[in-house]
Picture (cartoon, rainbow, N blue to C red):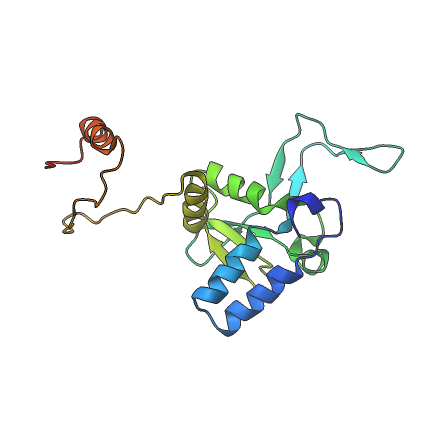
Length: 193
């Protein structure tokens, strides 16, 4: 199921199969298949509104533009707040969120934006937390988004770690100027030759 399918019954058979295979045998291939399925999925997310939606004559609902939406959060073993999301209506209905919460249907990209924009307030997403309980950390979500946006991933090097650099076979265009500019502005590099 993909974002283009919002409005249809929420089902994610490819994701559920990938979750099952990942649990049976976690390796590079099953992880890639799992994350490939996650990013192309649509989820049911529990939330509450401070103002109820207005039901029109045709049965559709209109949400006030100034409504405040509060997403349900769970706390994991590391005491982080995680966003519960469900792969289908049946998983949602079987959860503790079935009563007192509204269903919001969000594509993975929207969940990703919620996690990233929370500045660490949301530590990840828990898919089907009361059945399959598949967790994706906020750190992974941020790194995945960064890689998708830039093609690069920032890795932090531990203080005191030894680094070996070599001269590239082909000099990248503008590399020296950009590196010099970064080092002058950043102030964390002692020396560069």
